[in-house]
Amino acid sequence: MPEWLTTDYSGRERIQGGIVDIGVFEGVVLSPELFSPANDAGFEADQNSVVLEWGWSGTQPDGVESYTLEYRINEDDPVSVEDPGSFSYTLTGLNPNSVVQWRVAGVDASGNQSWSQTFYFWISRGHPLYVTPNGTGNGSSWNDAMNLQSALDEARRGDAIWVAAGTYYPTNTSERYSRFKLKEQVKLFGGFAGGESTLAERNWSLNETILSGNIGDKESKTDNSELVVEAIGTSANPLTEETVLDGFIIEDGYGNQTSGIFMEDASIIVRNVWIRDNYSSTAGGAVRSSYGSNPKFGNVLFTNNISMDNGGRFIYPELPNFIIVHGLGIMHDGRGLLLWEMLPLLIQFPGIIIRVLIVMISPIR
Ligand SMILES: [Ca+2]
Image (cartoon, rainbow, N blue to C red; front, side, top):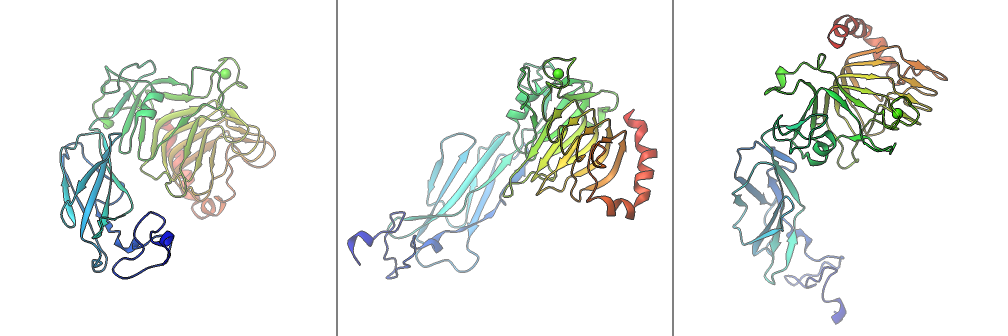
């Protein structure tokens, strides 16, 4: 073997155990698998230690002499643990509101490390983030409430955000691209008076909590936010039903396509929500569920949403309680949202719509 070929792409020795793989990397089979906790696992706030477990689906390769564990808590520097033992290590001293990344390398006789993939888990904050319209605090209590954009920025997986009654705008500027962006595994609850200690105490129909696109001139709609709420994941990391929007009024978006709620790779839960007075010049007056999305809408009221083209686009969502009142679509039969794909479901279960109309209007208004 010529000297320039004696190491692989990552600098590891080509000849390992008398064998050359000839691939870009040598000995990648020395990378262990991570078993527990499962990737993306969450723990309660009082969990101060977690047992990390790794190993092999089959037999351990001969070339592995030991392991190296690496973990990183929040934005701290990564910590490396040489020879943490075989197959498990107890990580202690964990605090609430932590996200921990970790991975394990198989180490061969030459000290070469073959890393596993990276997993992470999180420790919950232990309390909601409290939000009021004029909050300037750190969000740790109602008395120390923060504003909504700060809470969304601050929120990590597993967080809940409790939002007191009032009107919230995506920006104080005239930037029409500004919108509220939902995050994975963050639950947004509106409808609080601002003193509650449990979720059950809130009265979302009484304490109207409005996410409004009416930025700029309050007398004008045409300068409003193009979209009020955005829920966008990726195909690899979609937003799931652990992402919740509950107890809000979504109003006064004014844009070109979808001005109320836009979802993409987002199978979120939207409930106890009133979507009203949104305008779109093309598809998606109120809501659009784009590709990779299977949202669940429960107890959602649509009123006075206008689309000049297609109303919106739902692709096979689950709609247990769902009502449309006063939708308006101009060119197609959008009425604020498009039901092309929904039609078979509505025909199949017409009773659902009727029952919902009777049961659900009263608590909303
Ligand atoms: Ca305006």
